[in-house]
Image 1: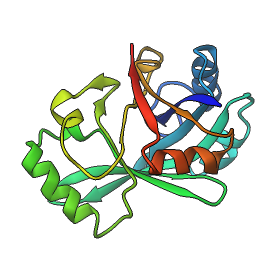
Image 2: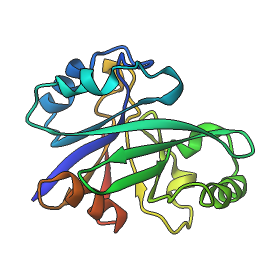
Image 3: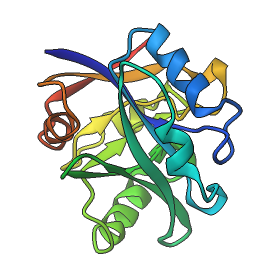
Length: 182
């Protein structure tokens, strides 16, 4: 089954401008099959899970958190939970103003701390060609990193998998997804 999704969204549970329900409505209206709420760890509201759990949608909704990690400076890693599987994504690698060589050094350090499964090669939903063509051992994914309504729908992944959290995560880990942009 062909599925369309975004694995990096922010809500009013941290620094986003839309509630989780508004985020879900916006993505669902654009034909998405799954999204991940990935609010920032240091801004996260204590009742985050409860608020997100009240969202009504036909999409698959993943719970995640964007972790702030210190590796020769601060970087972000998203941890997304499936039913049994967990996905770790090194976020928006073009946003740090690293050269490709500096990125590879940080990635090597990051691998010692987290089991990285994918690398996000977009910045706020825009293509980062230098990082898209970088030779790394991880699947490269596109995402919006949406914080506002205007940030929704710029970049997404598509994959052919059974409809279910763990099936989606497994397909991403195997690199069986492709990036799409408007």
